[in-house]
Length: 261
Image 1 (cartoon, one colour):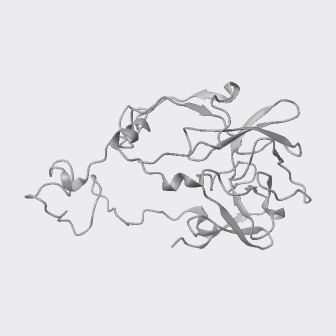
Image 2 (cartoon, helix red, strand yellow):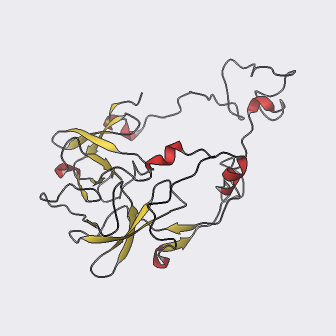
Image 3 (cartoon, one colour):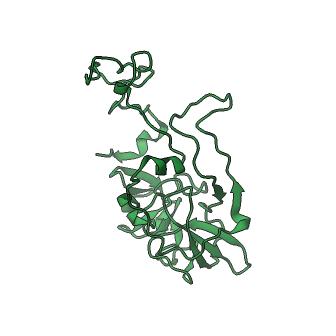
């Protein structure tokens, strides 16, 4: 088992004004039926309100703390503006207490770690994260620990961005992104180590279809250690799985320049 190094965290208690209660759903929908398996239990959490939009423009904010967020893999940074307004953002790698960050649409904004800018004014080759897909909606992609995207090129209306999956996608130059790589890079090296630790995180056990009875799964049954017997692996409900592509034709297909490997 291996855990995270919390050395960068400077504050143990979250900012009370930026908390909301988070009700555990246990993978159930409004009818009480399980629609997502293997969820339930786990430690109680409070939701941290993250400012993905970076709405306060052209006002420098001071980083007052780097905190842990149980709802995401990255660290979060607490910002304080001159008018004493406080917000959380996803903490980029290398951001420290006392640093100043800025959100601006101005052309002369410095492309430094933590600054939120229009893609139009971010130099090509820059590492970015928390990228908007629709102007004003707030960052939606590249938000997990250690991830970063790169601006490959720009044309008249779009930036060509290489995502962590190696996919190259067109994003409008009027969308915002934050400079830098997301913090907590060591997250990918973490090993859960035991089943109980997954339970603390709200993840319930997963049983292989092969280990079930025929009544429970199409792969179930057989004498001893037999194979799945099915030439096309399927889910418990008979849908193809294990590599079967399920992506439907989407409005965004036209924005994908190069598919992921």
